[in-house]
Image (cartoon, rainbow, N blue to C red; front, side, top):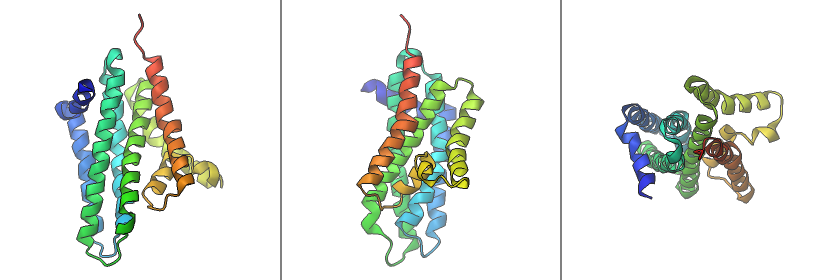
Length: 215
């Protein structure tokens, strides 16, 4: 357990990771404040953009963390990265509340805040795991970042363009929108968890297996 939190603290001690984390948080906070200036902004209207914009940078932190780790420390590094993801997700929840409070409107969707908050944390866990999976399986840094950024959104756009809406729902970008909608029924949660397994847990587990220390 100490190793997990030690790996999470590396984000604050390594300059490059620290600044990426700062950028991630600033993007989330800035988005919340800008949306809060709109008097009609509610919980869902703020949460979606806040978590979406933070999820752009967070996977890169995951890529860099696993790339810098020794083979024997990869598992604790991934666990530490997940701690960071949960922290970023909780920050997104706080930013959402701030944005809605700044809007100072009437009905704002507070009744859906708990569901949106849980969904927002899962968004950051999913996107972080996509990053660790890509970082473990694609060794060159630039191609890894390009795959991480282009593949999920590009596949979502391509499937939508050809009318394959059902398959489009199995992409991380589509699930991000669902998780921050506050209207997740049991089948929606099941689909979201399946996408997390398919895009995040599976590739990360495969990468850990491929990169395991040899004896």
